[in-house]
Amino acid sequence: MTQEEIPSLRLSHSGLSQPTVTTAAEAVAHSGAVQAQDFSAAIWSLGLRIRDATAATIEDAYNDGKILRVHVLRPTWHFILPEDLRWMTSLTAPGVKSAVAASNRKLGLDTTLFSKSNAVIEKALEGHHYLTRPDLKSILADIGIMTDVQRLAHIIMQAEFEGLICSGPMQGRQHTYALVDERVRESRALTREQSLAELARRYFGSHGPAQIRDFSWWSGLSSRDAGASLDSIKEEMERTLIDGKTYFSLPDDDMVIPEPPVALLLSIYDEYAIAYADRSAISDSRDIERMIVQGNAMTAVIVLHGKVAGTWRRIMQKDSIEISLNPFRELTDEEQEAVESEVQRYGRFFGRKAEVV
Image 1 (tube, one colour):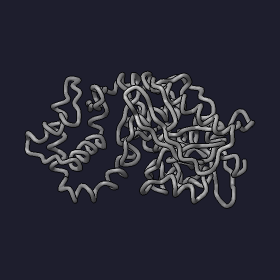
Image 2 (image 1 turned 90 degrees about the horizontal axis):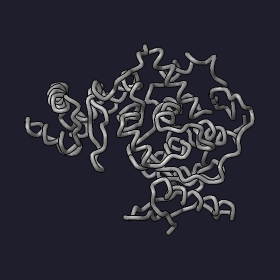
Image 3 (image 1 turned 60 degrees about the horizontal axis):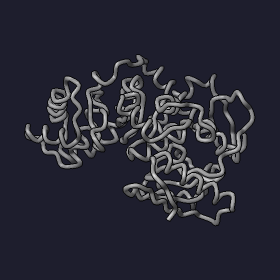
């Protein structure tokens, strides 16, 4: 493996080069977790990794509880499988709680208040009731808990961290919450050591080749825990040293490195761009700066031959989608045709006409 081959291998391992799975649950299972704070963007990210997927089929899987959307790994939403919720939350919630502790103190939130809020949320959701965020805000306000936007978000996150609530089905275009004990029928019972190994196996199998620090960033685990995770499955991994950096991945049965797609339109926060501390394999330093809005907030990116080569954004109209493109360089005729084909693919996925403006 060479530095130049890393993008092709990542695209192949992620399912972006040629999807092999046919359901949202299979795609999420393969990735382990898929960043999903922007719901429609995350659905497109999944759709790119599923054969013949549409937004409707993925939303159906979400509404049926075949995939869930919760705060896990880091202080942001991810799609995960129901059976992975408990062990993944148990493994990563302590780190996430630590990350938001200072904000909780600033907002006047403590264990006493969380105990009170969790109790009223649990009672309100019992019996397979699904409540929206405004519903929960009203219920909490009724018992005297102040619920401005930030406080409400942290109260709900805390209930997720403690394994109390998770996503329910959509009500129109509003998200709902459900009790984990009622929404999750089966769970995998893993020890902490098994959880560390399983998370590493999922990550390097779907995101590799990658470095330990990439896995630590994605998982929210400490460097020590990330190293222990990798060490526990070292016999399963391939290790390659390139320019002083050590990359790990699960071995390929087929040693032929596939050609990357000519063009892809990746969503904001797509795993291919966001899931690495070191993004130099897919973009040079100047282009990395251009695709970061603030902190680690990514724009939607145009990927050409495996490398980030521009940004794009969409405007959803009633019956159509307008796509604006911002390539970082002049495109070849082949690349221009491939990008336009991806625009049409995006429109078909959402069941609307899409056009470049």
